[in-house]
Amino acid sequence: MVKAVTATSLTTRARSSAPAIFALALSALWAPPSHAADPDILWSIVHDRCVPEQVRRHTPGPCAAVNIAKGYAIYKDRVGVSQFLLIPTARISGIEDPVLLAQRAPTYWQHAWNARHNVIAKVGRRLDRSYLSLAVNSAFGRSQKQLHIHIDCVAPWVQSALAVHATEIGETWSRFPIPLAGHVYRARRIAALNRPGTDPFRLAADGIPGARANMAQESLMVTGATFPDGTHGFFVLETQADPLKGNRGSAEELQDHDCVIARRSR
Image 1 (cartoon, rainbow, N blue to C red):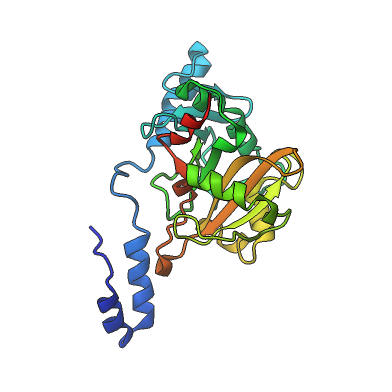
Image 2: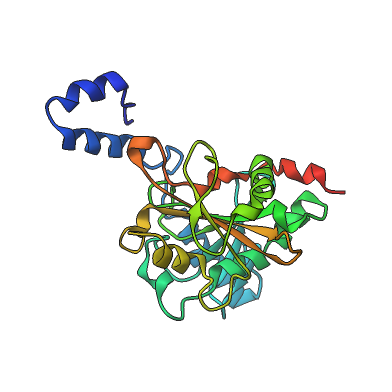
């Protein structure tokens, strides 16, 4: 178990070695969550069970769906009432994997958004697009070694914050006006997830200084949006793992796996 780093201990050690402080903070903050007994469990479920079942019997096995042609599976996560995961059928480590920035990389975000009907079915009522979200955690805010996109409801307070500040979110990255979950986020809007230049992975890599060289620290959330002019699109939120500021880089913190926001729907 990694011990917490206290202000007193950091102050004392700072007198001897600043690099040691940073290393200690890294180990304390970026240790994998304790429940991550098997960091390859998602890969094993998809690769060893869902895909073979789909190929042999034309059923997705323990997954909700498997699309061999487009290279992904949809799996109901054990956490939450309505959380699903999009998991590539190819071995992709996470947000830092270079394949995600390739010219013809799969449009995983669009596929994940298309799978939102699974969330809606679980809560049993129609949900406004602004109530639904997708999230990918940084390498330091996840427990698995296989890329997965969390598909679930957005936290009500996040949806409200986005509605209040919608006119302040433009078509380029800018700092979101207020902290979210106590962390600094950047935000921008996009019209679609599957058009050239709109893939959130590439938007972060190309639009945020230093991100391409440090994608492991990046974390992204996408939520459906209806813009002030009435058109539909998406808000993209980005944060970076920062050990000294207590930020694991886990945009999943902006989701609500109990889907409390569904109670607003009729």
